[in-house]
Image (cartoon, rainbow, N blue to C red; front, side):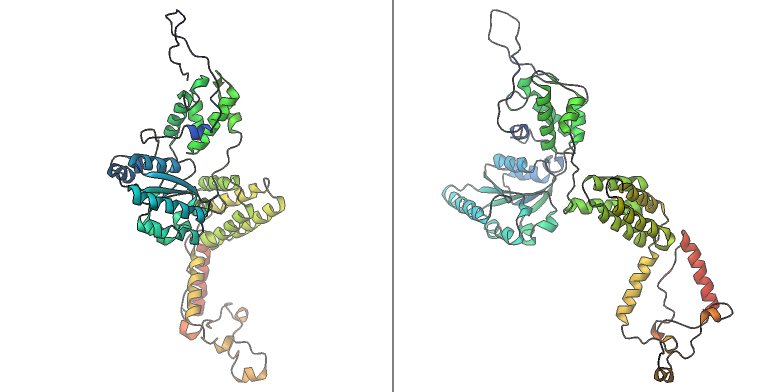
Length: 450
């Protein structure tokens, strides 16, 4: 891709001249310089900005309201807030919950109140990283949003259900921004390559076929990341240079996984791993395992979850599953990463391909419920402990039959309290080893005369 300059003023030649390529003027990073200024320049989020969609209609009505923009880094939250202010003629005041506090919020609110009274012009208070504010700090916005003194637009990468106080959620609509599609990112990168004033156009760079598409795919939907990598690649290529796949690889260096060990993405990925194992998809389970470990997750945490899967989702359909999961935990603890990760992968595949049963999980839940409902039911006399003569006189242990000494190895005595007689908690399934266990239970019941 090559960008041609405008015609130069004449030297007597009738042929157009190409301006000498030059480095862009030093200043803000490329991602900041290329920030869209109008709705037409904005890429992505068609589900919010397309014809008839919520934010598009809000802009057409010229009446913005308080909102929370929830989306991953580089999806356009800050840019969209600025465009909303520009399109509706509302004053825009940015604020960072990371570096500023409630005192600054009070200043902005006071200024906004005076301006509203004097000119009738409203103010958008844009709070970046709003989830960094604690609940008490978030409450400080409430009266001003309620009174209409400011229009609050909060931006967050975290799930508002967990990070934003309920009263604020009830006063602000939540809009979910999605990672940018690769096609949208390619357009963003192409514009940056050709833009002479704000982008890299003055450098007259070229890019090998497919390089921008590869960069768009590597950016994981993050326009800021994509533009940062492009700027680094341009620096490596130099003025008038060519961006190759090798140049791009050097610029990208190491792609950090989109992962937060304490945030929503942590729970999303462990949920995906657990459900892939439960659904017997070994390939998907390995993928989510790799995503978690690549993102820096503690292998022992994953090992604990594998042990839980073995008990909860496989149970006695394959008793070896628990042994394999525990062995993987011990192996990882002994070897550590990266060698120990292979043991976790082995256990993940085994669990995914094992027959599944949650019958023990259900039985345990029913038994606990029965125990809570009947906490005072007496132990039947014949199976009580009788260590003293008095206890024996009271009938403790009287009539107890020692099963191994009976002709069939199974006596006809009962072991549950009378109130629960005949109650069944564990009902084996028909898969794996549980089929054998079901046959055993039926055999024992026939010997007890049930």
